[in-house]
Structure formats: structure tokens, C-alpha cells
Image 1 (cartoon, rainbow, N blue to C red):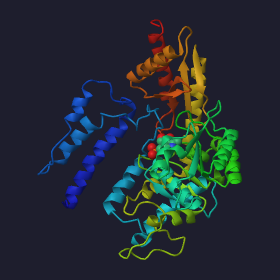
Image 2: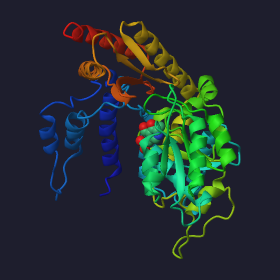
Image 3: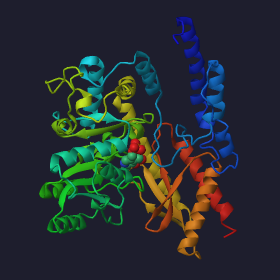
Image 4: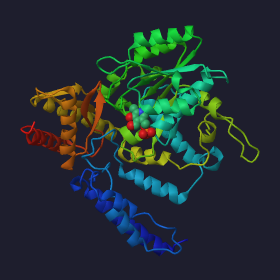
Length: 472
Ligand SMILES: Cc1ncc(COP(=O)(O)O)c(C=O)c1O
């Protein structure tokens, strides 16, 4: 199980060659596999295997991976991936994982790898700086936005409610990501205590309704304790009035959490900062480097104004553990997060930021803002098109609405349009329901997506409309 140094070099070269070829061919690869293909199930079933007693050579395994397994997927790393909330997967993060897994150090406690812990703390500090938090703030890196939202709910619950917390109520909007409801339930709160406040035309939480609902709940003997707002919803990219929400939270004594999993890194841009004014007033913020920082999946973060809150919610002791740090600058991650043993995820962000510099990310994010606006303007020019969500950040939603169709008919027509665009495999986009209307969404967030791909996307939409049009 310990290859010789020569064998290791050969293995690394074999993997590097496949990976580099794969990345180089991304622009010409299909944007997704054919998920409607009748053969898919059989191809997946063929991959099931029994526990191997003996080994296989690496080349054969790489063949299997790169020829049969990887192509059977949405091409989330490709420039044409405009679905859900795209990520990317910058190359240095892959190198970081290689290094981190090869040296395999333990970063759950400070004493076990203080240098590596410091690098991860640097990353957390940089993220705090990006959202405008003070030097006294802190946080943790998580596996993603769901775990960041979960940790925020648990922390808020511990800070604001007694041990008997079943009367606690959380306020969200009807556009809040579903991971927040899940987080509330996992944190032990009754699901019916999660309030969904209605949103306005722009899909932003209605603060008057929020205040009214909090008052009613208090009068009903409940204990409002947390408000979750969104800085970039998954549905339409909407950004709540964060300053207004902070006023409500302050007046009502609620823990304010901003789910900025998608939008947060746009704080690097001037337009993003304008749009998310007030974010720094939140008690906690979730932001996902595997979205707006183009990192590979498995990278989220939770930032908090008061790191003591994370500590109070997560600290436990055991005799077999090493001495924990008393100096608050020396952090034991296991004392401020749910995990003990875990990957050294800090390196995945540290290496690309150090290599490229944050300005490279800033200008790429600015480009995404431009591309989404360009796409919305082009779509607006097409006849019978309705923009259902103007881009606040890098997401726009629209539908084709030719005359003579019922609302149900239009929904079916737009599902057809989506299928037609995706079947061309130059781009992959997804749809959603917006107030009973089926909408197509374009979310631009990969560092690999540039003007040429957006032009192709528009060509595909135009051609599909022509193709579907006369038959309607
Ligand atoms: C706004 C928002 N919050 C939370 C999440 C959940 O993040 P993750 O998928 O990293 O768990 C997402 C995922 O797309 C999101 O868009």
C-alpha cells in the first residue's frame, strides 16, 4: 500500500495527463449528459460492483472514470453550466486537495497542526473582511451552505433561547433556501415554528408583514428568536432589504442571519456592495466559496460577528482530548463547529487566493454581473419574452409568452423550450415556478463562462423558439 517513489511519480503523471486533457476539452464537452436517455439506468447499474479482493491497474481505473463515469453527469465544471447555482472548480483547489490528502494532517485541534490552522484562519479572516465584518469577527469553513445555515440556527438557538426551546420561532421568506427549514428541523425546532413571510414583486421579504407576524407570535406566547434573510435567492437572485431587516432584528431582539451562500462573494464588486448594504449588521452570514469563489464542491463558510457565540454553542470536553487553547486567537476548530476529524478544507481556498490574488476573483465576478445583464437585455429584445426576474446579481429568470395560450399552456410551452435548449448541449439551464408561472433561469457563475457562451445560449434560445413556434 506504499508505492515506491518511482511508482508515485508514474501515478501522478497518469492522473495529471487525464485531468489536464479533461480540463482542456471542457469548452467542447457537452453541457450535460442526456438524462432522459433510456440507457442511463442500465449504464449506472453496470457500475455496481462487488468488493474487490485483488487490485486493478490505475490506467484501467482511470479509463473507467474518465470514459464512463464522469461523462454521465451534468457538466458542472464546463462554461455552459448555467443551471441552479453554478460553481466552477479552480485548478489550484485540486492541487490543494492533493497536498492536503497526501500530508494528511489533523486540523480539528490547534495543537495538532498550528501552522495549517493559521492558514485556514487567514481564509476565514479574508472572508470576514470581504463582507465588511470587524476584526473581532470570526467563523468556520463548512462543507457547504446547508451546514453553514444549520450551524447558524443551532448557534442562534443556543444564544437566544432557553434549553426548553420548543416555543422558539424562526422567520424566513417564501423565497428562502429550503436548507434553512431543514436546519430548523435538524436543530430540534417544530417545523410549524418556521414562518414564511410573503415577498414583494421583486421577491424580497415584506418587512411590515414580518413585524406583524412577530407581534402576533409574541402575543400567542411564542418566542421569536431568529430572522433569516437572503442575499441572492436561488430562485431569482433576489436580495432582501438587509438594512431594513437589521432594523427589525435589532428592535425585536432577534438573531439576524443572512444566507449569502450564492450572493456573498459579489461583495467583492462595487455593484454587489451596493446591493447588499447592511449585510455587516448581521449576527451571522453564510457564504459559499464553492459558488461565488469558483471553488469545487465541498466548500462553504459561516461567519459570525461574535466568535464567542460559536464557542458557547459547540464547546465540549473529554479526558482523552489534548489541552484546548485559552487564547482566543488560537482556535481549536472542534470547539467552534460540529466536527472533530475533518479534511483540511482551508487549503482549497488559501492556495487559489494566494496564487491568483483576490482581484482576479473580483474582475471575474464583475464579468458575471455584466453577462447576466447582457443576457437579460438580449432576451427582452425577443418577441413575446417576459423577464420575470431582472438580474440583481448574476441570475435572470424569464418565460416565453406568445398570445393565445392559457397559463397552463404557457407553462408546458416553457418546459418544452427548456428541453429544446438543453438538448443542444451547449448550455444547461434549469427552470422554476414563480407565482404559478414556469420560468427559465440563467445563472452565470462559473469563471469559465464568458461572452461567447452567452451568445451561444441566445442562439439556442432563438432557434428553439423558431423550432417550437409554428407548431403552437
Ligand atoms: C441561497 C442558498 N442557500 C443555501 C444553499 C445550500 O448550499 P449547499 O448546496 O452548499 O449546501 C444554496 C444552494 O444552492 C443556496 O443557493
